[in-house]
Length: 91
Figure 1 (cartoon, one colour):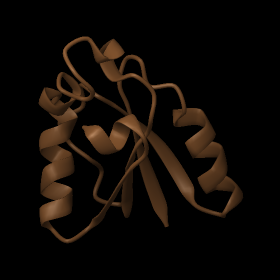
Figure 2 (cartoon, rainbow, N blue to C red):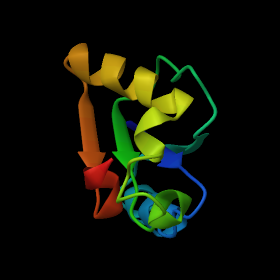
Figure 3 (spheres, rainbow, N blue to C red):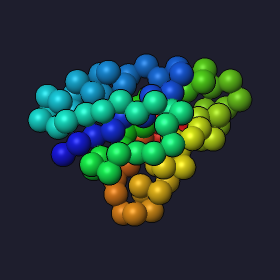
């Protein structure tokens, strides 16, 4: 299994998430919020917690408009898995 972990400015547990999945035997890749494409070999996308963009408007509002989120939506619509943790769930 390969896990893609989305990183926004203000995300603060992406490396903890990466560590946990690697301890379970998964391969991981950090996905920067400005990327518009998710690699085809990603089985699960994790939107990690923290305070994306400092939660300046409201939780996840700015992050929801980031380029990576179009790819995350397409990933989910294709029947693939997405996990949101804390603030990542609010995005």
